[in-house]
Amino acid sequence: MKKVTVHITLKQGVLDPQGKAVQTSLHSLGFDEVSDTRIGKYIEFYTEERADLKERVHKMCDQLLANPVMEDYHFEIEEAVNS
Amino acid sequence: MKFAVIVFPGSNCDHDMYHAVKDVLKMEADLVWFEDCHLENYDAILLPGGFSYGDYLRSGAIAAASNCLQQIRTHAAEGKPILGVCNGFQILLEAGLLPGVMLPNQHLAFMCHQEKLSVANHTSMFTNQYEKNEIVQFPIAHGEGNYFCDGVTLNQLKQNNQIAFTYQNNPNGSAADIAGILNKQGNVLGMMPHPERAVEALLGSDDGLKVFQSLIMNGRLSYVANV
Image (cartoon, rainbow over all chains, first blue to last red; front, side):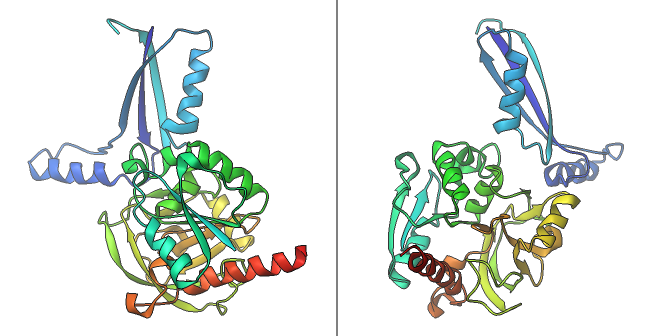
């Protein structure tokens, strides 16, 4: 088994209201050093090992998990432990 | 003319849509559960508003990946009229039947009020009962209605006369004040404001009637043409 973790973020230049709100809140707590706060999604799943796994995960991301018009993604594939 | 109103888990404007076509416009209509999606015998397909799958992942994304949307894609390619309102619009975008995406409203708040719109395209099968640049009033109710697309797509929308409705007072930050767009063939319309909630004066406006009347008129004309 393999464990896949996908990280999805809004593309640079796309308004990220959650990130903006969180940054404002951090500033109000006195953490003025913070900038460019972005919030994204983290998706993890387990999958059978297969030769074309990387290609399949790209397809999953393009067809459902991310919307390539407004989001970027990257993923890691690692050996599953105790799945 | 027979209408299918597709119901997804989380649809909450399905009965409003059904009421508009069935009770107000006196047309045949069925509420169709997305898993029992057989659309061959319907003349038009309506995707209502709501929060399909709780807006999980992204608004409309999971509904767009359903088997029902695969069927709708086929019917759309054959020229059948498809109308998506609010979440229905979001589903059409996620399904790639219309270009672009929805972002959260610019000022972040969920908005629920009446908005004035301008009919930007008065010649489509959804809008030909309106006058050129007619001002209408429809309610909006959405948190993610900020239409976004790249510059190339926006130019194509303008050049092909695919912008159906624009906001008079853009409430959510949409590109080019866009409230509703058509596909290139003109048989798929997605719009954030709710024409089905503006079909009786009692509701504050009956300006939405003409969307359905345009469709019905178009249906009748094509029926006559086919005979």
